[in-house]
Image 1: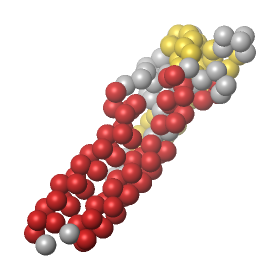
Image 2: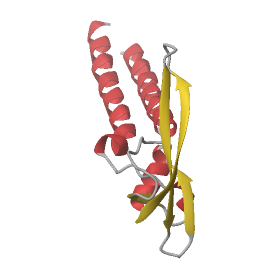
Image 3: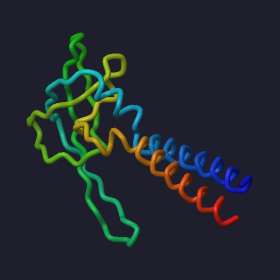
Length: 141
């Protein structure tokens, strides 16, 4: 029983740690702050193209839109959208999401359930798996 309890604590800690790490890597805090803030219409002022190699050595081309918008406070903010491939041309308008206190962290990525709740889903599923396996261990041992 003690082994199952220790396993459960370690597994839950690992699940929560993994969820936090995933959240930071996917820029979860910045995106949630932007989605909870304001929206604005941004104009594409340019598109920067870069070439890179994927894991297999194949050359891939990525385009990043440079967007500019006006905050409600009247401040002009320009940023490069790196999180999402946008199919926009110079002069096109897109909706952006930004936090009032940090409009530089804006994004054109629309809020989605999976992106918004990834941290909670990973932690919850990890904890549920830990509980089930700890119960099996307690029964077997």
